[in-house]
Length: 630
Image (cartoon, rainbow, N blue to C red; front, side, top):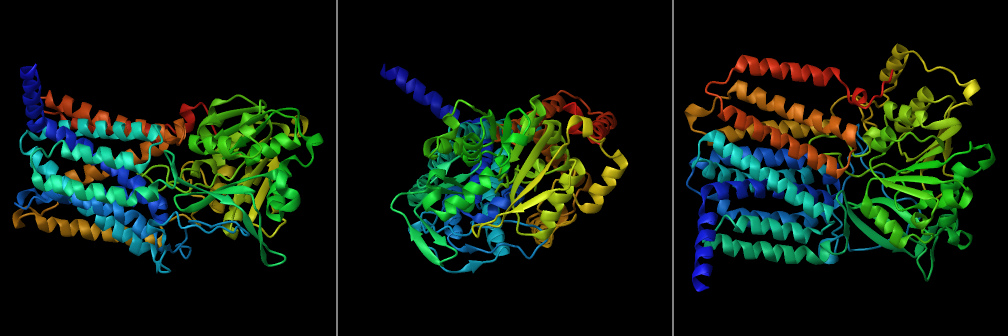
């Protein structure tokens, strides 16, 4: 028995000392921590949620710079856990400071809380305090970028060191296989709705598994554990979905805008949900409308689509972006119709089931689907008497590989065409939106008027408790319906009015172009990239243009494919994980194919690549779904 245990111990030690195992685990650790920190920084620092692609770029930069450090004797990778500890604490610490909305740019970022809410909490702050200091967005993003780049430079040097034990192609294949494992590990934790402490614990174990016998790493692991312990009370305040950090606060007071005083209640009349430190939605008890002006105002707002039910066609109601259930509750109360509800975040649905006072998701007339709105519309054949688009404005990017927000493809011309196709004759669409800019309001009006049959009716909130609008349009009865405009005329109108399309889905961008803050950031990235070349010996600092352009082309293609496949199959976290895993699996397959070639035929390979690019350019995602738009 003792001999068997000793043999197992010897075999385990040999495995942990094996260079291939170390490289595989290092690849897994790199991708795992990349995804962890994208989620962590986006959840803890308000502005980062809208620019999480900066974190990804800094990781790529750090890995590249770190690989160049392999020629130096200083082992930066031994300090990787210290840098991780710094990143863990830096997230909520930077999030403590007031974040300045870059509203002076051509991009709309966030709007803030509805008027009248009286909410005061310190649970979103580390150490329960918030210094009254404003930090400009460029300072916050720059700090996070540099800090994250340092961490991944340590990882990059580690990988560069481990690469030296293998031929380049074999080393790259082992590292890519480990990267796939890292993605799948984080996907597993996300599917279980785990809190960050689980992410950090597994990430630390991955690093320890490849640092056998290194006492410095063991001591620094204690530092990382202390950092986790420090932020544990903070992270436990929230619910964690695959998309967001969700903060739930009971509402027991509101500001009476007419009397100018605070009205307090003994019991909660609702809950405020914020995601990634930004207001998202409320759960309201509509039965309290008689003694609560704020609830009464929002109750009227949610019930507006059902003000004249006698004129509604005979059919179900569709609610996309149903959230925690306010829209569903209003539809159930004001109609006797079946209600189809679509919501992308299962954790928000769960909160609605647990906390909503009217329990709308438990009603037998409700058919709930947890899915992306566009994907649902493309796959259902149902026709609806009304389509209600809830507050779909998201607070995160679709993917860190793009600058497209999670909800961008819902507010496009093609999306509105899909909604039109699902309306019964005489049916209407009600688009609810919190718009603080005239150009965004005009854009939504124009888009709906191009797609639907009437002049868009804009209903502003009649109370003093919010700057919200309902954009109303619809289609005529079958015998009165008119044919859609000619394709050329529509295309010209879309371009001239800046209306979002699937090719340019930027509702929140005032005009086509790259905003100033993006350009400034790009300059910083290029300058830092050029400076990193100084890490090479003088005779090796020339940029090898074929490799440079191949790398740039690869990431452009990867980004476009991520966006296109999200449009095809939905902007869900499962789709994103599948896409990233698939891309890495193809890279691994490419390596294995290349390893079997005596001499690669580059002309044939580039010809096939060109054909693939042309097919991707010509065949739009809409064609693959059997949809054709003018």
